[in-house]
Structure formats: C-alpha cells, structure tokens
Length: 638
Image (tube, rainbow, N blue to C red; front, side):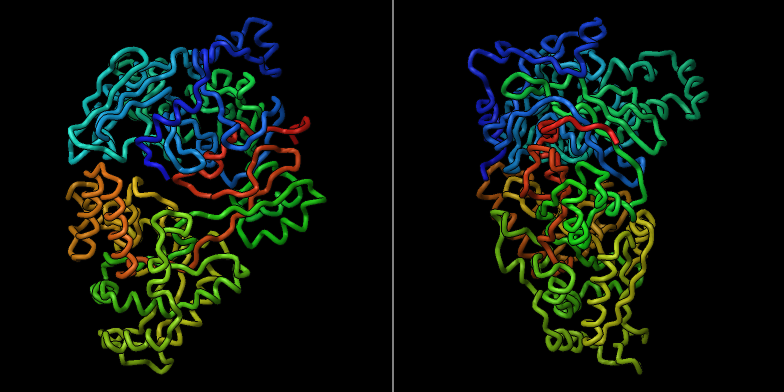
C-alpha cells in the first residue's frame, strides 16, 4: 500500500478530466425532471459543483448504470437511520477500495510535513437544500461550536489536539481553509474519513437560528423550553447532529437524505439533488432514487431477507444464516455473497486488567494466566463446528491481507495445549481444587470466570459453550452473563467485570501509516484496560494511571508513531506494538476471517461479489460506492 499522504495528490490527478469537467454534458435525473420543468428545482448543471467528482468506474470495475429504482433494506431500530450516513459515505476525504485516502467532498488537500492541511472545496458545491457549502460552514464549526463553552464544554475533539495543542485555523477564501499544527497530526485525515466521521463543518445557514450569537438569547431560551429543551445550547445540539441522521430539516451532503421524522416503522431516504458526484457520462449520482429502511425485530430479519423483503442486506445477518439464505435464493430472486469480516478477531476475550476485585486484578495481570487461558481454547474445534472450517483460528491481530501481518502474531499462545495450560496455572500457585475439580483462587473461591456478553446472538453463546468444555480440562470454570450492550459497557468501564467477549481490532488490515491506537491503552472503549484509557482521554482527571510496564511501553510507542512522518519508522513501531500485544496476550483472540453474508437483489448491479466487511476503515458498504449501485430494471417499492 502506498503512503496515504502521498496518495492524496495522486488520486486528484487520476480523476481529473482534460479540458475541465464543465465541458461534460450532464443528464437530468428522470425523477427530478418534472421539478426542473416546473421551476421548483434548478437544472442539473446548476445544481452540481463547477467541478464535480467523477466516479472512477474504470478503476473500480463498476459499470455505468441508469437512474431509478428503490432499494429496500431492513433494520432493527430507529437509531439505525445513522447507517445511511455510514453507507452513503460522503466524506471530506475517504478510503478507497485499497484503503488509501483520496479526496471526495474536497477537491484536493495540500499537505505539508504532515502538520499543515490546506483543504480546497469544490466551487459551487451546495447543501441538500441548495444553499452554498463554503468555508463559512467550517468557520461556524470552529468558532461557534467547537470553541463555544456552552455547546462544547470540554472543547474541541482530542483528534484536533496534538499534545494539547489546538490547530491554527485559517480561512483563506470562500473555498480554501487551512488546519495546521506545529507538529504532525497523522490522525486528522483518517478521522475525517471514518465510518463515524469527525465533522469539522456545519450547515451554518440553518444552525445560526438556534445560536445565541445570532439570535437574542432570552428569546432563544424561551423557544428551547417550548420544545422541551433546558436552554438554547441544548436545542442547538439537538438540531445539530449530522451522524445521527434524525433531524430531517438538517441540510446534508450525503447521497440520500432522510425524509421521515421518527419514531416510525418505515424510513424513506430520497436522492440529494445537489450531490457532488457524476458518472463518466455525466449522470448525477446516486443512480438509485430512494432507499427505504423498514424496521423489524432483529431476530426475524434473516427470515424476512430470505423471503425476498430486502434488496441489499448485511446488517443483522450472520454466518449461521448462510445455509438458509442460499436455500431461498432462486425463489426470492437474490444472491448471497460472502465477504471477509476484517476485524483482527471476530470474537475476542477481554480480561479486564482494571477489575475492582483485588484477587482477580492480580491474577488477570499475570501473563502466565492469560497465556494459560489462551492455550486452553480449542480454536480448531471452534472453526470446524461453528464456521465449517472457513474461518481462521487466530489471536487478535492483523490479518494476512495486511502488509504488517506475521504468522507469529497470529499463532502466539494460540495452540491448544491443555498440558501447558495446566503447568502455567500450577506455576502461578493455583494448585488447590474443589470437589468438582475446579481450581481455587488464593482466597479460596473457585476459579470461575464470568464472561459478560451482549447476548445479541446465539453465535457468542455457541462459542462460549465449546470453550467451557475445553477450559474445564484445565480446572477453569467458564460462566456466561448476557446483558444489554450499554449495561455491559458500563460494568466494564467501572471495573465490575472480570472478562467480556466482543469483536477484536476494528481494523485488521492496516498499513504502517494507519494509527495503531487500538494496540495502546488510550481509549476507555478498549475493554481490556478501560480505566487506563479513561485516564488518557481525560488527561488524568478520571480513571487510573498505567501501572504495568508493558502497557506503558505501548502508550509510549503510540506517541512515537504519532510524532513520526517516516513510514519505515512507523512500520517498526507497529511491529513492536504487535509483538508486545501478541506476547502479553492482553486480549485473547479466538477466530478471525469469518465470512459475512451479503444478500443482493438479482437485478442490483455494481455490488462486488468479493469484498471486506469492516466498520472502520471501510464503512461496511461505503468503500464500494453505494451511490453507484443501480438496478438493471425498474423496481417498485414493496
């Protein structure tokens, strides 16, 4: 993979059209033509930026399509409307299919020493309501939102801080803005491209009506109370959330915009008439007119998909649904693809090194214990019984598709060896057993590991049941405790859990220029060291300071990576961090490379048969440009 800082400039040249994009003959979208004829909407050439982004279909292997049609999909709750922001994947810069950063909403980015980013907007670009998208929207965010004590009490995002230094933000003109620091900020552009992106702009023309700088504060507070909000700041924050996608009045830059004010059983997203992309023949994207998101119980979504009620579905489908889905393909007129899930480990055990229980805390911090548990798991059996041998028995590390992959990371302490596991547990001093054969903790309690889970799938339960049998051979009793996701998270963060199960590294296919933050104790959301992560995030105000040398080394290495602008040095840092995590077994990976069913209507085109299914980077469907998906024949909304 090429270094992403360099690739930005390369990508711009690759999509340029000789003589300028303005020379193209744009084709009006049929569904919008009546609005243009009536004068309610401007012609397409006036709605597009002066230089729209031309979809590089020759490079992605996509075919030029046709306008029209409705994509039906199924979700489990109203909150899932945010996934249309994920799938739509319009970002200032974005990851392409090679997971390299390229310009998208921006025309280009000029980068100097990894610390100065001059961003060039597309002249004439408009929000979904037709209002200009300019650097005023960036100024509004920086001055009136990020640095407003009422709207952002903790100040700008930590991603915008380099060793506590905030950027110097310079508005050069209506389409040019610069963010710069005295030191490199390699996390800046990837954050803009994230599945949950860092938004550094706002639709200022819309939000100013809710801001006390632009409206009388007394009057605004009264309006806020009438709408059930405590003050103007609460009202502003309610109106201003591009990712949640719930405010149907908030202008957008996404390919489809929400028109349904929830709660509802059916959400309708219609095409953005001012979207900034076209195909090589001048058709404004997206091809698809609208997306309908139907709401159903997550438990019955696979059954609904199998009866043909979805045109494009991955969410709420699991590998154990594959046989059923394949059996119904012909009858329900769809195909089932299998994409690789790109987590470092599909399912991972997280020993809580910050557990409150002093006996368990000491034991969990003993590397011999973590290694013993890892070697007491028969990953080959998990793969054969649950995944039909199609997954990869593996620790929680980078996948073979990553240039950073080494087999020793994947196999570290992952061999099934009950004898070795028993020797390590004996060496620790856990030699006493109760009448069931379960080892005893130093205080006499049985060695019963309660693994907390969300209980959202039978897959986790099946995996834990198989592990229970093998670990019993080492005198370890495994118990499971399912609970709601938020309840589980809060218990982990508070130190009330011993161990939990979830997915592993979010990005299992990184290159050296991607942030190794998931390998270091710097975020509370990392279940193996939540209090250390909280301490880092709050700059010492909350949580606990790191008190393990190996974990402290990881935090130091991540800081070194952050300061480096040399790919070779970053690669060395990555490998040391991967090695420490492998040897210390801070997380216990179980299985990786699990296949994700992707159900695609037979008439839907440009959805790749093979792909990676990943949240970040990738945005699930996002890197495969859903705005370029199209139907080979007319489809009606069902």
